[in-house]
Length: 480
Image (cartoon, rainbow, N blue to C red; front, side):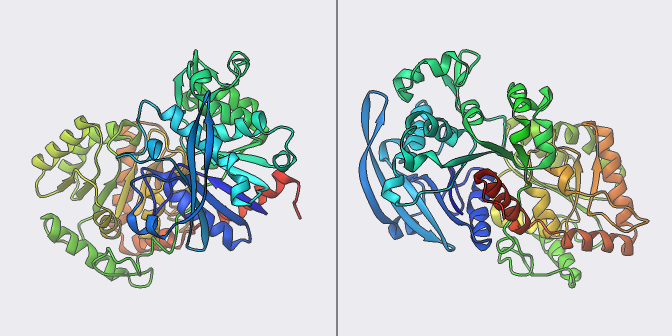
C-alpha cells in the first residue's frame, strides 16, 4: 500500500496547530503498520536551517498558474524513517508566516497542482493520496479534472481528512480564472461555489473518494447545522463515505518518564514524583507550596471555541468556595487575556495566568496538575486531553467531538473511567463536573485509581494507524 500524505504543515518542520502534530506522527505509525507512506508539504522559509541544509534537491521545473508559469522545486529529506518532500517556490513560501496572506488562494492552489504534477519527479505512484484541510483540498479536484485520461493517475484514490471544518479556504470568485485557471462550469455547477465565492474545502469534499474526520462523534456532529459550518447538507449527502478516526499522540514524544522538560520523570508506578513536579512548579510560579492542594490547569488558545465563556462565568465563584490552585497557559483574544490577568490579580495565592506560550511550561503543567479543564464549545478531536491522560492529569471536559470519544466518565462502583464530563454548554454544568472531580480528589485511593486509569488509557497512534490502513484498503478494494 503506497500513500502520499499531503499536509500544509508537519512537526518538526512547521507548526501552527494540531494538523502539524498529526502529519508528524501518523505517517511514522503507518510505516510501522507496513504502509509505504511519504509526506509532501510546502518548503516554508521558516523551516529550521538544520533541516533545510540536510535536504536533497530532486527536481526543478515549472507549474502553470492560470495563464502564467511559475518555478517549482522539489527537495526531500528522511526523518524518523519517513520520506518528506518539500515543494519549493520562494515567492510563495519564503515568508515570515505560513497563512493569512492576500494571495493564499494562489499559494495553495500552486501547492496542490505541484503535488500532482511532481509525481513523475518523485517516481512514486501512490495508491492513495491522503489530503488534509482546505490547503490541500484542490488536490482532489485537480486529480479528477486535469489528469483524466492519464493512466498513471487514473487508479489513484483520495481520502480527505477534515481537522477543523471551520477553516475552509474561501476566496473571491475571480480566483477561478485568475489563479486556478479552471473552467467556470465548475463554479456554476456548485462544485466550488459557496455563497458566490470559491471554497477550497467544499471542492475537496465533493471530489474526494472518501472523507474522514478526527473523531467518530465529530463525524456525526458536522452533519448537523450547529456544527456543520454551512456544509452540513453536503456532508449528510456523503455520510456513506464519511468516517471518524480519533487522533492519537506520539507516545515517544509525550512520555512523562523520559520528557526532558519535566522537573522529574515519573510513570504510573511512581506517582509521588508527579507530586514533586507540582511542588516545583508551584515554587517557580510563585504559588503557595502544597502537595495536597488540587491544581486545576488549562493549556489552551484563548478563543471562544475553547469554552472560555464558561470559565469566565464561574471561575471567581469556584475560587471563592474551593481550596484549589488554577494555572493557565496560552494566548489569544485580548479580552480573554486581560480577564485571566485580572483573575490572577484578584486571587494572587490561587491563580497563575501565563499569557504566552512555552512548550517547556506546557509539559510541566501537564505533569504537575491534578485536573485538566477542557470545556470546549466544539472540539473536532482535541490533543490537550490526550496529553493530560498520558501525564495523569485527570480531564474534565464537555461532551463534544473527540472529547466525548476519549474521556470515559469515572464510575466509582466499577472503578472504570478516566475523567469527568458534562453534556450541555452551560457554566453551572461545568462547575458541577469540576466539583465531582474535586470530591473524588479528596478520597486518596479513589483518586489514585482514576489517575492510573487515565495513564493506562491508550491513545497512541497504533490503533488509529490500523484504522487508517483498513480505510486505505477499503478505498482501493485491496482488503484481505
